[in-house]
Image (cartoon, rainbow over all chains, first blue to last red; front, side, top):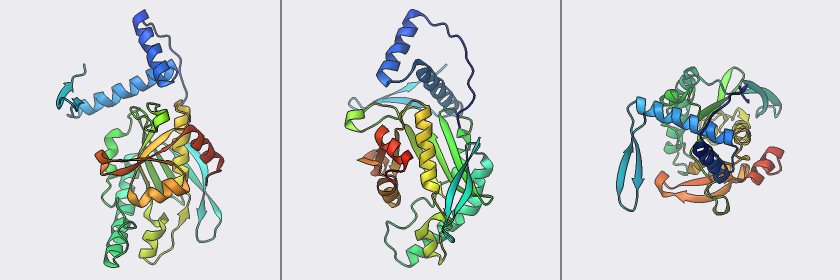
Length: 71
Length: 210
């Protein structure tokens, strides 16, 4: 059930490319797969926030929660 | 997209043609409300009246697929359904982002999370026995798990999948699918977290462990 794929050229700075390569290595994924994950996550978070939900990071040790704001 | 699959008709023992599809809509969610839920509740009621073992009693009688309608169209979320003889036989919700292996030597490897998997109640033997009926089709759950494994492979996750199993479903995941029992999760009502490693996923697809 694979969808048809389209190709695009992506221009990244050296720093952005370095982060992408680091993430791909850490997760044992291709760079395309990392970007695909990032896009899916961004869409999901954006939709959840748009529906009125909030996104928090929790520090269990300090018992602190900080809300993540997305543009 | 629709893919032909086969189920087993428990009445005749014959293989029957069915379809696996990912174009799930709110109509399918409504079908679970109208056709599945009353039967699940009836089976739960009958089993409670007959004082059956708590482990057999349906633990998903309150599931509400219609509440998942906002997730349709989310790229991080994939739904699969199984249809046969014009009826919805099973439904599954998968998440492809943000879930990782908890097996110590694979910790951190991404996997496909099986958030919900439900088989139509007329395919669940203990429910139908409680209602004096015979289960209709076998194989719906394994076909859906196979779809999750294949999605995991397409995502580059090597077949890794993970899920929290309801107590009544532990036998299915551990004995029928032969998933790894990883840990009880106190953050999820102490449900059992089960996973397929890449090797187990390959064995499952080959049918070695079924």
